[in-house]
Length: 187
Image 1 (cartoon, rainbow, N blue to C red):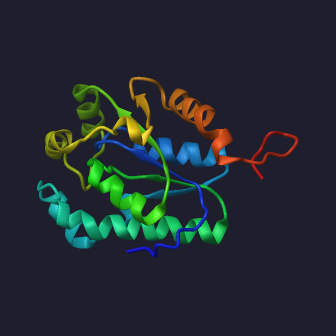
Image 2: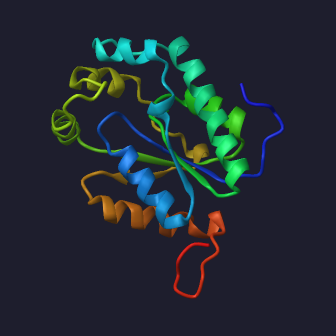
């Protein structure tokens, strides 16, 4: 688990069930805000990946070490680069987000939501992904939408990725204190 001496990095969690476009949106926001991008899926253990690929959902215990690896990497990258870190992570339950916050401190949250048929359609278009479409219903069942105290920005994935990225950047650009050069590019 990360040390309790939190660094003063800015971090943003882009969360939601599988198939909502977390990776694409988080990458786009990181680029637009001049930050660093991390995908939590890159920090699953081989055992977790095999478990999901076999069509079985992860339980809370299986997620614990994964969430710690993710938050440790967010801290490491943030301290190394001194840039905001935007990370894509399902973070379906409030307890998972609490665990991330206990390691990272305050973080901004973007919750990507959408209609089940649209999400299922997107999943069907992802061949060879470790997360089979059969796990969508278990993720929807586990999903605990952010509470008002988490102050999440909710974005409907029926919008285009560009519209979502623009809305997120508009909401958080001042909070991330992004410095820009004369052309408007992040520095």
